[in-house]
Amino acid sequence: MRRHVVHEEHINHEAWAIPYGDLITLLLAFFVVMYSISSVNEGKYRTVANSIQNAFNGTPKVIDPITVGKEPSMSLKPSVLTMPQKPTSEPIAPPMPAPAPETPKAEATPPAPPPPEAQAEDRLAGIADRVEQLMAPLIDKQLMVVRRHRMNLEVEIRADVLFPSGVANLSPQALPPLRDLAGILAGFANPLRVEGHTDDVPIATAEFPSNWELSAARAASVARLLIDTGVDPHRLAISGRGEFQPEASNATAEGRNHNRRVKLIVLGGAEGEDGGADAANERAVAATLPANASLEGGLPTQSTPGARLPGAP
Image (tube, rainbow, N blue to C red; front, side):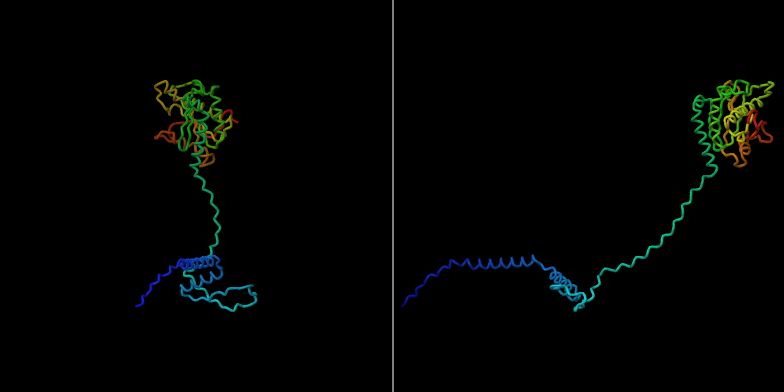
């Protein structure tokens, strides 16, 4: 029997070339695809994107033709009709109403002037400030007192500064402060009342039979100096109050010294308001009289509203 001879299989040492060739082919195809993607035709890309969008939205739309070469003349009518675009899902905002014509603004009305009483209080406050500033040395020595009230201002001067004892003539040392005070009062139109007061020590001379005459004469001397310094005499009224309106007890020398005084009352209303200076002075007299007295039958006073004083122009 013939033996079957087994031949050894030949080993192929070139088998690696097959997968290598496949790998090279795949790499070539990959780089070709990458190159094609990197150079995109903008027109084709837009067309493809619109087609995909319309496909997903479900609305048919004719693709715009791609122009190759020169653009056709404007006189030629396009042969392709485009379908109306799909309305957007966003709601259309209603038209804005036309702005209303601007009405001319009314001119701002000027603020109403303050009432007369407020104006009078402001004037009195201004006078008081200036008097206190200018007469500070006498006020500090308690030789002058400034009292503020709602509708009048009182400037009280001790008689020791103005007159010697039992005399109605002003002393030389009284002239400078009185002239300074008159310079302030001359700049305002408020009515003025000058009141003379004495202590209860009786006097009986040929010139002054009683304290009434002495107090009135002292008030007239102060008013005369005010007129000489520039104060309008029509604004002035004088009053002699005697010893009947003391501010301290006459039982002591200090109290009597305190009661000997001259008082200048600056009224709130200007001259010509509410009957002028006479009516304002009458109101001031009524305010200073005791509660059980009246202008007709109360305490006797010597008052000369707006009178021409001796030696006045």
